[in-house]
Length: 415
Image 1 (cartoon, rainbow, N blue to C red):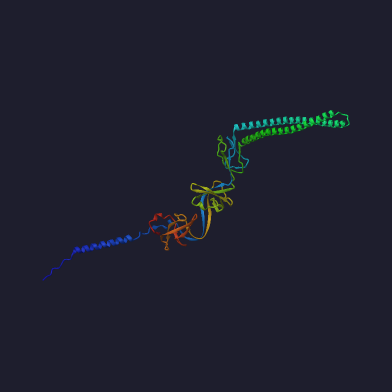
Image 2: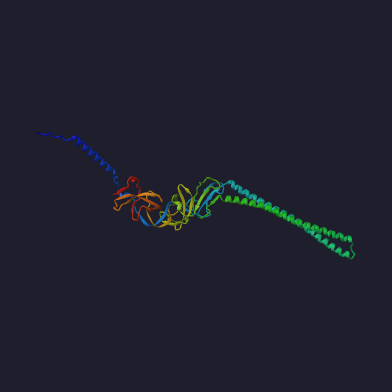
């Protein structure tokens, strides 16, 4: 007897197979999600790589600037005037007595002549008053001398009458009269002497008053004379005429700058240092100035207390001879040495990251092909180097270029 066979449950098999596929697909998806993105390739010759070193690190700051004369004389206009002639042009060598230009001022010249006439009149009046007072003094001296003579004669007469009266040759009344006359003249003589003394004091006072007027006129005339002389503008010092910012026919006012004279053999450098880097600069620090035709040693002599346009002006005195071509207003590069750090870990300054901050850098692995990101703590910085506090060791190679485009990756491949 034949037994009928059961047909396999195809529906159940399909369900099992489908379930197994779903589970497999989920496992694959989960595995792929756990995988890290593939490291991007970066051309090695497009990045800047430097090696971490240990040793002496020079802290320096750098800035651009210009050479300027140590001694610059600005020549102002002493009075108002009109430019008549320009005798010397900028760039010429001048001496202290060199006449640079001539001004004209008719009112000033007229005032000078008037002051001269007033001085002459004051001198004439002084001489006239002095002669008159001397004459009055002589008259007073003559009166005093006459009274003295009369007094001496009266005294002798009284003495003679006194001798005769003792012998009874002259009556007492005559003696009394002669003595009275002598006493009167003695009193008059004393009065005349006092009057002569008072007269001398008055004469001296009047002469002093007139002398003061003469001195005033002399000072006024001297002032006008100097103002007229100042219309011929002189250099005032030996050097080179740098600027002459006026034109023929131009009207200038008192105090306006007419010329600028400098001594080109005595120059200094005015450097513009970023305000963030200038905080450690001190007077006397060693510096060097690159004129692009030679490097000149120097030292810091002045630090401007004000900040202008984000920079601080630092003056550097030049301690060495000037190279050929060094002249005022020449553009230069200057470096100031802040300090010397002994036995510190340092590396080239990265494209991003300031001193005393924490950043991440790509450290190249030993295979020289891959690099992974590490955290680095930075310390003090210099122009081209920066101190490493932690995160790197001596001999490590790191990428210092700007790697911001790879911020989402922790590893890269160098090709």
